[in-house]
Amino acid sequence: MNQIIEKKCSYLSNFFESAIEQKRLFHSIIFYGGNIMLQYLMALELARLLNCRDKRNALCDCQNCRWIRENKHPAILTISKIDNKSDSSKTVISEEQVNEVMDTLINSSDYHRVFIFCDADIKKLNSEEQKRYEEFINAGYNLPQTGSEDKLWYPSGINTTCFSSVAANSMLKSIEEPPSDVTFIFLTNNKEDLLQTIVSRSQAFYIGYVSSQTYNIDFLEKYFNNYPNFDKSQVLNFAKNLYSYQITNSLEPNYILDCLQYYLLQIAKANFDNKIILNFIFKDIEKIEDAKKMIKAYIKEQTVYENLGFYFCRK
Image (tube, rainbow, N blue to C red):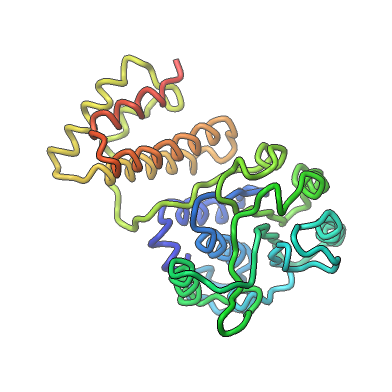
């Protein structure tokens, strides 16, 4: 994958590469978190890998890869209130707009079609948005619209205001029974901002991991040999041993938490067909992300590890 994705989302880049290689990518995906521009880059990278006709690496310059980087591929569409629409609505993704997209699925395609749903505006960027915009451009991608010198196209999280229940429900059948080689991707700040009927039919991924190092996960094997079952009798030893390993090896608590997330994704790779286990895994990964926030808030590592252990308990 692209170097920025590798650096910012090393967990997910490895996971998705495996899913694509094994032809087991989910047909409906939700990315959520605060950095919608990074989510958009991830969505385009997935689209590129799904359609690459050559080396399927970060430097590939086949026609499909080039088109997607230029944001000109005919089968990769950004769906927002200002993108890929022919009706007169200006503040929402309309039912008519969604129906036009769904109608295109009747016909077969030589490509793997990807529809990226988000909110978007052409606006003047603040300093943080400008930084994320520049990072996206430095990744070698173009945005759907160029805008002007002082106002640029910028994505934001989709929600029930700009993507109403009527519009969302009009695509449920296609999400439930999608044609082959079709993937829907929704970008949002919070899963709660999407209609529950969409969430229940999709696999959600938190975009927030920031690490690119190698992880030694052997020490976790004994704690997760019965995963997703985690007995209460294990909790205190789990917390005690994690903390002991951290201190003995002079590690940062975030490294331990990164290792936990990475380990769970390895389990996910081996269980693509088990929706129950996958559901546990991605909820647990999200909970570990919350644990990182607790560390940042100066809560003691032992307490954080104990909270995680009790959360993992399912007996």
